[in-house]
Length: 153
Ligand SMILES: [Zn+2]
Image (cartoon, rainbow, N blue to C red; front, side, top):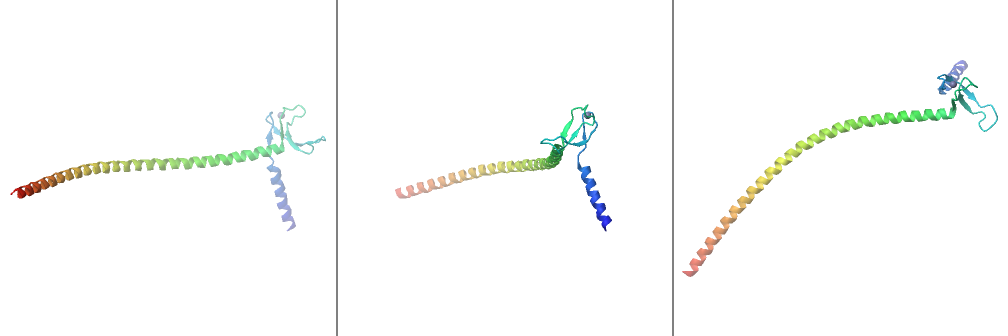
């Protein structure tokens, strides 16, 4: 039992140490993680520096900043994933819009045909009404003349 818990705690601490990022200096060599030893506001702070100290290449990076950079890189990766997902959705929507446009133009053709038929029919109706009106006018004038003729007689 006791040996088991020991093993698990050891594995956790190991994963923690491997969690610190590995940095490479301008010599393209692995930069060791160091601690500020001289007294001052930064004492005890951890940083990466060139392994060839004091003939350094000028590389210097605080560990906190590395973690910040890693966080930012992770956030950037997440954002890029979201962007690519959105682009994929956008492509799908574009295809759908294209299909709907096609359908719309087909329906528009039907509507155009129907409206042409409608105007033709309304023209026919107008013609019919005009003919009927002439018939009524003729009938009325005939009746009028007949009445006039009957009154004179
Ligand atoms: Zn270096």
